[in-house]
Length: 486
Image (cartoon, rainbow, N blue to C red; front, side):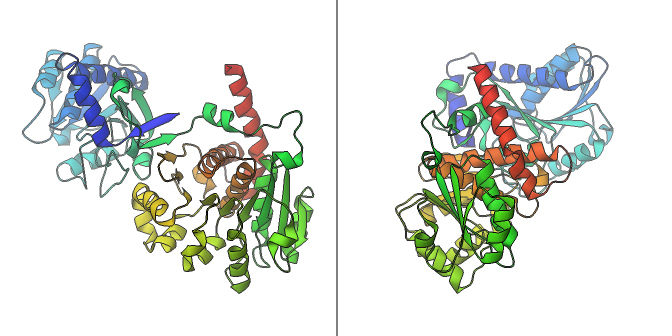
């Protein structure tokens, strides 16, 4: 499992470690790892041109010492310094290795630009002339590598207040920073390379975590010899309407293809016909009255995709949330709940799966603000609503009171298409019915959902149903890889 930390947590750990090692040792460890990554990224170190963007803090020192190492291997290394301060030891090392200082207008088109402008203490929008250098880097066409965190990205939250460096690779030291896992910061960071400088023994409980393939493989429910369809988990799906019958097909598909023992679906007649045609395994009911009585025994409910927000839908939402069973609350059910949040005040496990607009309605916040400050708002939602929250989006976050926020690291931009959230709800329902608590069910579901989308897309457009159909392949791959490692 990946762990990630706030800026304050990292600084405290660094201070504790620095008290036990010679002065400057941590910077040398960081610079050595940074230079090694840059060397791998360059087509060849000897004869390449590297430009360092250097601020006055320790990040600038890291960049200068790394540049000195690259210059020692034959690279042409030049540095642009911002402000009157520059790390004296790093600059001396660079000059000794043959590097030199240049002006911003001389950056041109190097092979690699190293962003050492600001470190984990940077807050708010980049001011001039930092912002000018960020624009120069973006226009250069060079590979951009950020030192620890891209300048302009809040290392603790991923917030970007204005212009920021857009890196293809970020080399982070000692501990992953929470802001590198959360958009918009994660998108600016590119691929994150981790360099161990010995902080592990000094770090507290993480602010955030991210599941790996090995973690997910170990958490997946696997039927045993004595399993039957009931023991594997029965999912009840309440979804679809005359207008949005397809949402029912997709939610049921997500549940069926992710391994539910049985799926019981109830909805309007047209939705039932479509579900029967596509998923004959599902037990279907044309819903006329109380879903709890008509559907039969289930272990978890998926509530909301495409069901509408009229009085009938409101009654269904209230009835299901009035039970003692685990519930996934999604889509239209979230709209219903936003008008009556007390419906979420229940003792049974509850996982809500909003996108930014839906969470905005629940919290009374503009969707754009949710997207800009995802970490802040998902934590706020947990505290105010007292449920487990899966915030969908370019970075999917799963949050629960008293636990680190989990960021999902799988997915593809091709997932941004209608209906994929319905599939995610079905997967979450399967895992909840199989006995996983909401925090784990949401995290594993998001991971599988993202992998299935990658498998289905492979660089091309997909439809939501493609994601559901790819689920068995990705589950098979995860389990096979885990068994080979064991």
